[in-house]
Length: 126
Image (cartoon, rainbow, N blue to C red; front, side, top):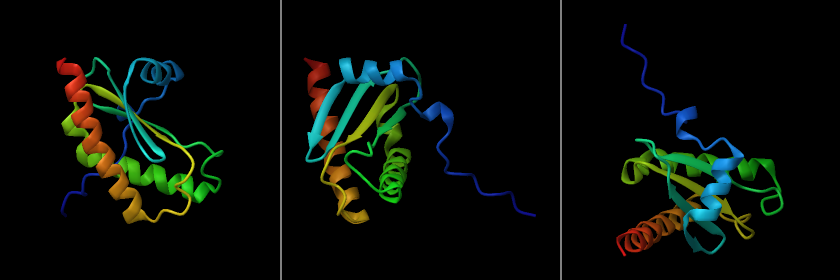
């Protein structure tokens, strides 16, 4: 019998879970914004990257839409986490993403990711 395929899950060690960790990211983090998406990152002192998601009901009314956004963000993070080892990332979603389909959200997140990497690399080297 073949071994079971490895899960592409979102382990607890990959998550920002404590309110103090979110506060630290919001207070001290490098911030990039593109439309309704804001990406914040800060060094975390670990060997791996962690992700925190802030998708408030105020901006994304339906639970199915909030869950879809979080699922797409986790999927994107899993494929790109190696690029930001040792950092906490927080994705904040503001108003205006309700009507977005999956390809549009992925494209916006990819553009924001590239912008964020360039911006934070420039700010950390100066």
